[in-house]
Image 1 (cartoon, rainbow, N blue to C red):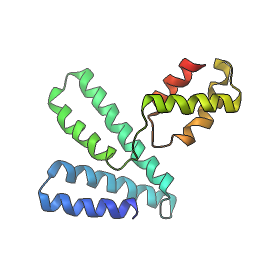
Image 2 (cartoon, rainbow, N blue to C red):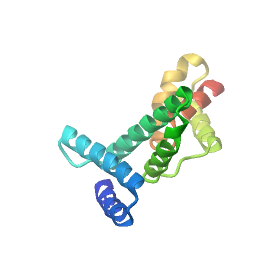
Image 3 (cartoon, rainbow, N blue to C red):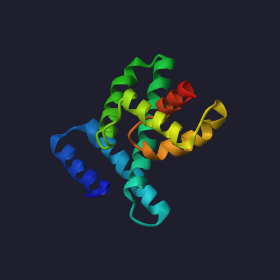
Length: 146
């Protein structure tokens, strides 16, 4: 089942359940997927779907940090709920320990030995972790290991 089919089913479920928050979030996700589909001109591959979901999750996490720094506590519950809904469509996230193991393996594969090899390591490790780990976490781990 494609992501679009899954979103359509969840949209119907949210409508029937009168879950306004979930309905709104699923509609936004569906719109983002449809816009990407129109942009690329073909049905999205699994990787392209993951890229859309990851982008939407990142936008919501950025909003969450902005709301916290601006002292807008009233907006936090809604954005946290949106984050939970978006995460429900993403693959299971790897733990920090699992990400560290993959980064260590990648460093050994590319023969990285200093901070100068940071770009080479990131370029190799990010496709392995696509949709399974936050880029900021990977960046932090690669920096600490080099």
